[in-house]
Length: 116
Image (cartoon, rainbow, N blue to C red; front, side, top):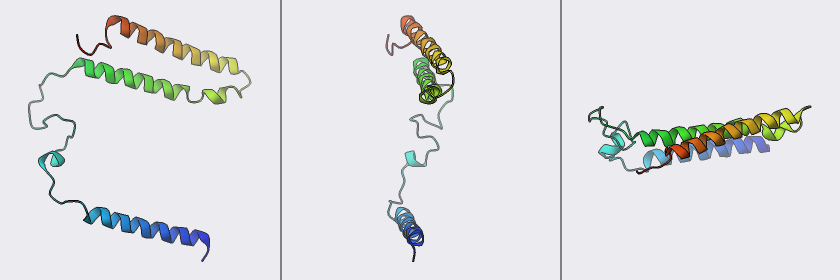
């Protein structure tokens, strides 16, 4: 047998063994929290009108904003291979400046304070 056939057979055998073990080994007595459709810590059967902390959502939005910053800056290393790398770096500097100013504004307004 050639190498590719051997690798495919080993992969299929290992996948089948692991899938079978993962199906039969776990305990089959799940508790109420495992059966719950939501595992976020909130009672799914309770009232939907419970108050939420707006600070939690502000921190989540800030996280998403800075996660987006990383996605926008990922192509930056390839920008120096363009004909005009100054344009790419100036746009990256503009993005970083705007996000830094936004973070400074949020900090000055007290939006990052978790407890008052």
